[in-house]
Length: 439
Image 1 (cartoon, rainbow, N blue to C red):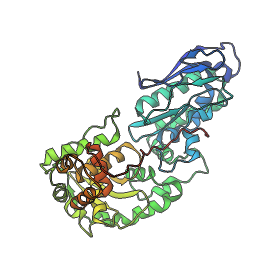
Image 2 (image 1 turned 90 degrees about the vertical axis):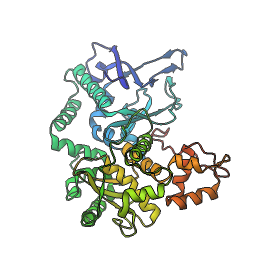
Image 3 (image 1 turned 135 degrees about the vertical axis):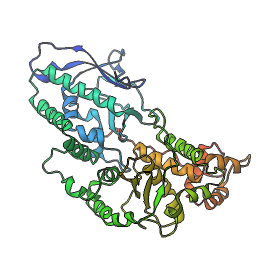
Image 4 (image 1 turned 45 degrees about the vertical axis):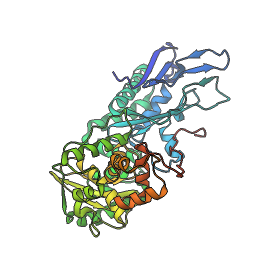
């Protein structure tokens, strides 16, 4: 049983009701890890409860009508209100008291959950479980199974009285059973599109001539309005990628396992440690180590292109124990960082797969950037150079020049290493909010 994400029903409150909405009224308890999301207090009597009285039909219809975007669309840098509506479970509850809770894709293996508490003067209860410091990462399979069981419980309870829900759900089940149709539905969902909408764009035209894995990666960061142009660019640079030299991955060993209980960057950081152990690359000389590892990939003139679609930094093609890596970069620092991130994408891919390194928020892309940061500016190398008073801005600039890497990489790696930074104002943590009061 999935213990990470649970929708627990406690009986049916109106056993003799005729219509489907009334028949599916129950006491619902929602828990995510150790957080009881439905915990509430009555505004009238002051009593606390772990569950809410609600009809399950509105939520089941919301899930069935928006299944693919809800579970496969990742959050993008600019969070739109349309995205919030697609991913806020309470947006489909038709006035029933329901916690402000959102789900979205964290990548191939994970679902992200976030919630918050807002004051609602018209509600008779107030929810009590406050927003987590960071959105919670959950295993995809467990969440999907829980939601599938939920919808089917509602259909069974309605006893044929919810025809629209049954039709929508049967359509989803048919798509899941058809491999090609499933791939198309996931691809549409990744872009926030309804695959069953006859007016939706034809993804097969955009994806023509682009491998499925590569198209999936760019779909996580590129807006729908820019996807046709991005696909055309990918087709244009494919010939250039094919003539780039191959990078040998045979000595890399195995990358670190991505533990969903840890931040995504941990897998990338630990993978860099493992690679250095396996290859014998010196941690104290990251500039030379990266040059030895990637060679012509980071040489001037070895890039795939100087510019490309926003958010795409490199393209890779895995060929057995080797890979072709093409960066989208104008400077040596860009080439080195983006080549390292792309090397991680190639290392963790399957034979023959093409991938893109991007600015996407999915776990694998986050790990690739953390891998690049640790390869270019290892924490151990920074600690060896830090004085008892830490680094100032001039120190960071000198290290970035020595390591040939972005200034920001040295700064954040120093923070992760626990090195004091003098006279450097750190920006507040960047956390995009999907759950906001006005949606």
